[in-house]
Structures are given as structure tokens and as C-alpha cells.
Length: 64
Image 1: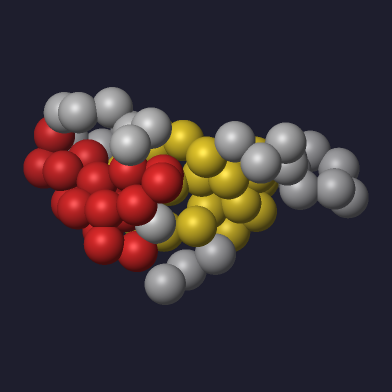
Image 2: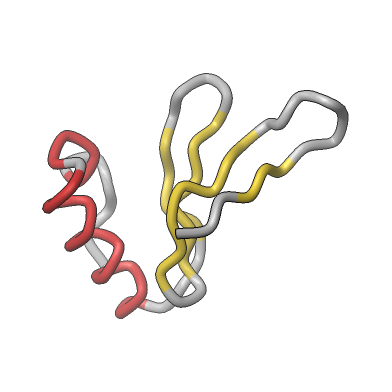
């Protein structure tokens, strides 16, 4: 699984936790995790993964 940080300075603003096609599961420095982009199928794959590995997160992800 790839990890990538998005930053404008020396402190990363967000980190990609996982990639599902074009969808990215991103964790912000404030601890908030969100699913960005991707097709409906990519988002379904991300949600299925979260349900298995991070069930408390899966409840917060939008249903595609």
C-alpha cells in the first residue's frame, strides 16, 4: 500500500492511507479521514476494505 503526503511546507497536511483505483483514503493532520474521488466502484471497494479493517471508519464513509 502506498503512502503519500500532501504538503505546502515542511509539515504534511494530509497523508494517503490507501488507494482504490482513483479513490484515495486520506488522513488529515487533525485526524479526520475522508474518501476523495474515484468511481462508484472505487468507492465501494474502499468502503468494503474499511468495513473489514477499520469498521469504525466505514460507518462514516458515504454510501456510493
